[in-house]
Length: 497
Image (cartoon, rainbow, N blue to C red; front, side, top):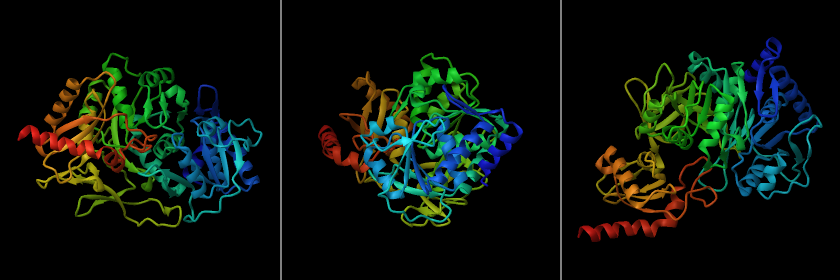
C-alpha cells in the first residue's frame, strides 16, 4: 500500500470524523474519503479500466478518484482544465486511456462530444464517464501510476510517467521541511491536475492528517492558465482561512499588488509556497514587507515535482532553497542542474530517463547550499560583446514593475537587448519607460533593455505565445514579431548615428 493511502487508512481508523477534504457544497471525513475512494475503485475494477483520464474542476471527488486509482492499480491521467481541445485529444490517444471521467460542462467548453458520457457508478458521484474504445494501449514503464502531461513548447504535451512511490517520497520530504509550521488546513488554488498541487497540496496534507479545502475555479478566481482575479482569491482566502496555499509567480504578484493597494492581509496564513517560474527577489521583499510568509521552491514534473525549497529554518531570497532530503543535486561544467533520486521511470512511448536527470535549467549552489536558478540553458543568448544573458532573469525584473504585465527579451548576437512588452490596461508609454528604467537600474549593463515596443495582444496559450503553465513560447514570439524586433536595432542605430 502506498504511503498516502496508508496514511488515509490510518486516520480513517484512528480519527474517522476528522475532516479530510471539503468544498463549499461537500465535505468528506477521513473515513468518508476512504469509503468513497473504495467505492470508486470497485467501479474502476468492475469495468476493467486500466488507464483512466480525469477532466474535472477541483473538488472532493477529484481526490477520491485519485485515491481510487491507487487502490485499484489504475493509471490516472489528469487533464488540466486549461488544456485545449487538441491537447486533450492528444493526451487521451497518447496515453492509451480506455476511459474518461469528466465533468460534462468542461468537455462541452472544449467542443468535445459528451453524448456518450454516463453517470459514474451510481454512487452519488459528481463525474460522468465513457469508454474510449478506439485507443490502443500505450507503451509505458512498469509501475506507472500517473501520467502527467507537461505543457511544453508545442501543442502536443509530453506524457511523464510517475510511480506513486516517487510522488509519496516527495510529499514526505515536503512534510518534514515545513513540519515546524504545523499546517492543519491547505487550500488548493492551482488545478489538482497540476502535479505541484497534486503532490504538495494533496498527498503531503493527507499524509499529515490535515484538512484540504478544494474550492472550484469560480471561487478562487483562476480561469484557464492565464486569467486571474486577485480580489476573488482574497475573498476565498477570507472565507476559508487556510494556513497554506501554493501559487505560481504571476498569482503571487497579483496578490501582493492587491495588498499594497490596501486590501486586508489574509488571516491565519503560515505558508505561501511559490514555484513554477522565476520569482523576482524584489517581489519577495515586497511580500515580506506585507507580512506574507512566502517560500520559493523549484521542481520539475520529471522529478515528481519539488526538488528544492526555502523553509522557515533555511530561507534565502534570490534562491529557490536547499535540496530536499531525497534529492541528489549536482551541476555540470556548463552550470546545468542535474537531479538524482526518485525521479520518473520514463515517458509515454518508451523513452527512459537516466538516473541523473539533466533538467535543462542553469544554476549555481552558494556556499550554504542554496540553489540559484538563472534560466533555461536552451534560452540563454550571447550578446555581440560575448556576455551570456538569461532572458527569464531580465523578464522577471521587468514584470516586477507594476505597468508591465508580460515581457519577452531577445539579444542574440546583438550589442544590446530588446523587449516586447505587454502593458497593464491603464499604463501609458511614459509609465512603461519609467518601469523599464527602474528594472534596468537593478540589472548589470549587459542585461539591460536598450529598446522596446508594445505587443498587439497579451501572450496566451490560445494564441500560441504562452505555455499552459505561463512560460513564453520564445520561438513563436520571435516568429510573430521578428520584423518589429529587428527594426528596433535599425531605429536605435539611426538615432545614434
